[in-house]
Length: 85
Ligand SMILES: [Zn+2]
Image (cartoon, protein in one colour):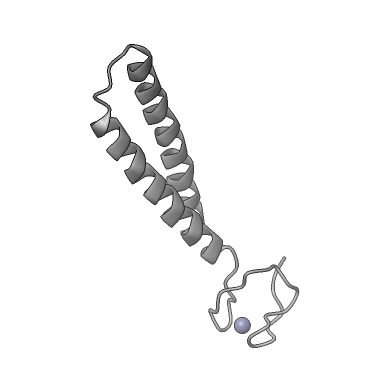
C-alpha cells in the first residue's frame, strides 16, 4: 500500500511537471488556450496532495493496534507495542 501510494505520488509529480512544461511551451508559442492543460495540471496537484497525505498516514501504522504513527518511535504511543525498526 505504502509503495503504491509512493508510486502514485512520483507519477503524478512527473505528470504534473510534464503538463506544466507543455503549458509553458504553449505560452511561449503565443498560444493562450491553456485551459485544458491547466485543468489537467490541477487534477495532478490534487492527486499529488492526496497520495502525499495518504503516504504520510501510512508511514507508520502500529502492527498491534493499527493506529497511525506520525513519528517512528521505538514503542507505539497508543498501546506500547514494540515497533520493528
Ligand atoms: Zn499500537
